Length: 329
Image (cartoon, rainbow, N blue to C red; front, side, top):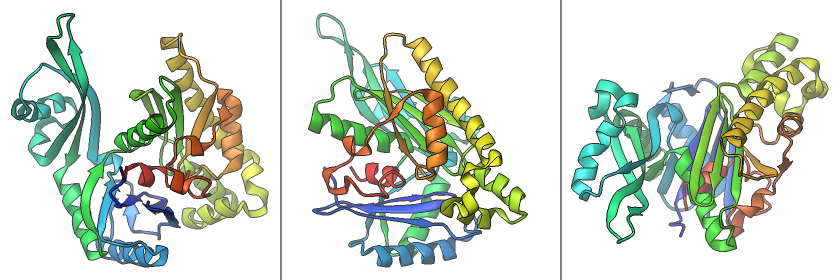
């Protein structure tokens, strides 16, 4: 059940906020230039002022918030561990992430959620299935400080995968979807991500290092302008630029990689059947890119309302704010 948190995702391209209740509120705003650059917050003070302005503009109430952790700062794993105590689980978690964090394990926070238990015929538990995450202490502290200055109180921080699992599991509880396969394509600013879930489980993920920014770059070259202005041209489809050959070349590259990821999953899981996919993320409203991708992957675009809480169904900004919605559930 939602705790009335304000869900926040601070990306490279846009920032989104969501708050549930009797009527959900969503605010999507383009991030000003030179505040965030990839993995680094360039100007914490100005970012705090920007978030404070958005909170007021969106009419969000309260201070408690839930944050989507930036990908550079967090690692997410599904794993099995022997049936040991909670204390032992927490002591062992850093070792499960050693291939990712190396000698920096002391600089990360670790947490987990129990997914289920593996048992023998006599009922004896032989393993515990976990969803586990490691997050940079430094990054969490930075975001906690800047959110505090913006009038928020950070209560929860999750990786994107957990936000998606929240959405799907809530949808399954409401609609009894069973073992339905959910293919979610997240068209982000820097990256495009493919998530494949079956029932309550995350089965596969793929990150493709291309996104809206690549479209912006070819538009910038075409008009000889900077990339930030080019993003405005993309958003308004200036002079029909989104149907141009230069943009279509980028769509084709992104779509090809998405198709490869989905086809590989189909090859490895030949019994799996699905005919549609959900589209979300920064570029989910760029119809030329979306249509190009759907043609490549040969899937229909599913109605996002199928996995959204009732209070935000039908809202035009929901696809771009999907992670901010999921982190509050």
